[in-house]
Structures are given as structure tokens and as C-alpha cells.
Length: 481
Ligand code: GLN
Image (tube, rainbow, N blue to C red; front, side, top):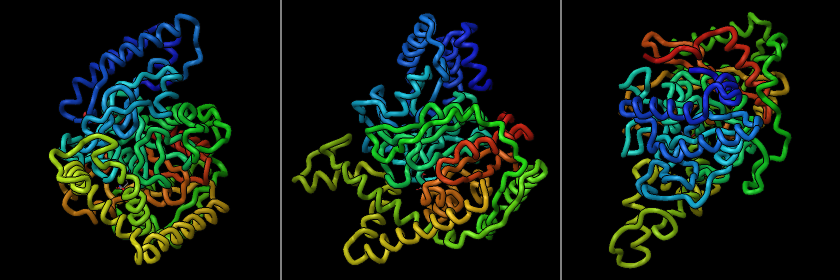
């Protein structure tokens, strides 16, 4: 697949129209989606209509379109007034959002064309894209394996060449882990870098929207488009948005790369360990300086995350009551019965488990023991990172302890599924940016991801290290058969 720069250059230069570009993407999506199940909805007519508008705008002389004619897929938890926004849930199966999320408006302003919505774990709760009972999304590298999750559909859209860009959301790893499992780049920006307006909330203090692309360079281009202050999300930060793609040529020489043994302990697959170590050697051989440090509270990360995320989820999901949104149960006896029947019938079992865990952690008598303590641990973890980033520029580690697992393998073992997030959740707890880039393949030809993390708002540095690494390697250019 061509990179974004090449496509937009051709579209802006009149060599190919946005309509032709989008038509070709729709053709590939129609062909591949049957076997891969990446898209929950494909917006054929609206996409073509939108592409026509982009062409018209170009014909009137508008060249200020950094994503001219680029087809984009959105995870189905981002509100669009076109079609439905289901979050992979029965409770929102027919839900039609009344407005577009902020990132969708920014993408369109930059000339991109949204072609459809992608599959996800129900309400983004999961690591395999299996908890939406309506559709199975498969890993293009091995159709018997999961694509990772919860933004699995978006990862597959990019990995299989359906669209050059897809957006996902990352609460505890949902962009980075599926990116690693499918061999693409996945970036979780700093908390506050990108507006969450119109992103259906899961864990509001953790959620962040970010791109899937084939290269770090493309991720940089997209990040510049979607970043920035938005008055409708009070947690979005008012800070200048750099032209990230223009800033990728920073030398590796002298970059301080941190490694912490906490990310290389028990449970890490040997092939993943060796691929990540090799990537670190590659960076070192280019002049990066490797610095070891300790993250003392990292071991509490999973426990801490699964209290805070479920607590926030239980509160966020209280709004699905059969009155305000989506599904409503038939023939309730009274209003309490309406709530309980609607929620019992509308939510899947993982979402119910999270609501119960979260409600418990917040309940009187347990609040101090669970939620409050988890918040204190979160502060300690954040301080660990702050201390680390005084000594290093970028932290380097695996994205996930294994490569893509089999469909169904962990579905009935929630704890095993939660443990798969061990290396990704701490970036969300600390609010820092992190990117996953391809760094190898295991003996079964499954992609392996390398994770780079940095201090708040250091996306430019992360992407430049990722870009320099991609100039030296070709893992990101390989395609599944
Ligand atoms: N797997 C994690 C969870 O289930 C993270 C999901 C996400 O980032 N949305 O909560």
C-alpha cells in the first residue's frame, strides 16, 4: 500500500481523484471484509459523496488538505451522524448518534473520507475483539487467530490494506496491542492531546483516541490532524500542535533509551523477548544510549487498572437505561423492571462483569480499600515514570507478552485475557504517550510489536525514534498473504 504522502500528492496534483481513490478502497473492503470481518458498517454512498466534495474543493484551488482523498476507518465507538454507532453492543444496535465526534470533523476538514465503522470488543472492554457477539474479526496473518483488541477491526483494516488509516481508542492498550498482533503502527497519544468529544466513554480518565497506520511517518501526519484543544472536551490540552511529520529526522545518536526489567519478566514469550532485544540492539548500534532503570510499582499495574477502569465504566455505563439511548426491553412491569431487563438483555457478559466489579469497588465500605487505594498506586506509578523520564528519553519494551492467540482461546478465562494487557496499561494510568511498531515475526509468522513510551507530549520524539527504526528495518512493509 502507498503511504499517505504519495496518495495525497497524487490527489492534490490531479493525477487521481478522491472518488477513484475511495472507490478502490471500497472495492478492496467489499472483497476482504467477508473473510476478515473488520467493518461493522461500510458507508458506500456517503463516502463517494464526500469524495466528490473533496474533488470539488481541490478543483477550486484548495491545496490545504493534508489527507486529501485518504480513506479512513473509524472504530464503532466514535459517534457519526451517518449510520449507527453500536460500540459492538446489543444495547446500541440501532443507535444513531445526533452528531459527529471531534476527530471525524477534523479528518474531514483535512480532506480524508470516512468509509465505515470497524468492529471492537463490546464498549472497548477486551483484548481480542471477540465480545461483540454479532461479528468475528480475524487476524489476516492467521485466520484462526484474534486480531487483538479492543480496536481489532481498525487494526485489520490497515493491516490487510483496506484503508491506509484507521482510528481506534486506547484505554489500556486497545490501539497498541492489536497493532502489534497485526503488524501495523498504533499510537496512543498523551491523555489530553486528542479530543474525546463524541467518543463513547469507557474509562474517562484513561481513554484516548489514536491512529493505526503502516508507518510512523503516516502516524505523524494523522496525529497533527487530530490533535489539539477542543472546548467540548475539557480534558483536551491547549498546547501547540507540531507538524509531527516534519520532525522525524532527529538522529538516534545520543537518544537515551530506557529499559526496565519489569517489562521482561516471567510470562514473556521467548521469541517476543528476543525480537524486542534485537530491536534495542538495532537502536544501540545507531548510537542510542541504553539506560537501565526500575519501575517499582509496575507490578501493581494490572490490579490497579482493573479497579479504576471498571469503576469508571460502571459509572459511564449507567446511562444505558432503556430511556435515554438505544435498546429498550419489552413489557416491563415498572421503571425498575425496565432498567434491569434492558440492561440484562442489552449488555454482554464481559460488560456486565465490569459493571459489577466497578460498582463493587466504588461501594460504601469498599471504596477506600479498592478505588482509593488504586488511585494512590496510580500516583506512585506515575511518579516512577516521571523519575524514569529524567534519565531517559524513550522507554523501550514489548507490547504484549505473546503474539496473537487463537480465537476462543482466552474468551472464557477473563483473568488470562486481563493479563495480556500487562505491558500496555501503565501508559494509560500515567497518561503518557506510547506507540507500537512492528519489530519482527515469530516462528509461526505472526507479527511482534515493539513499544516505545515517552513523557507527556513527547509524541514527536517517539515518532522520530520509530521512524528512524523503520528506515533501518522492513518489518512494517510486509503483508499477510
Ligand atoms: N484490554 C483492556 C480492557 O479490557 C484495554 C481495553 C482498551 O484499551 N479499550 O480494559
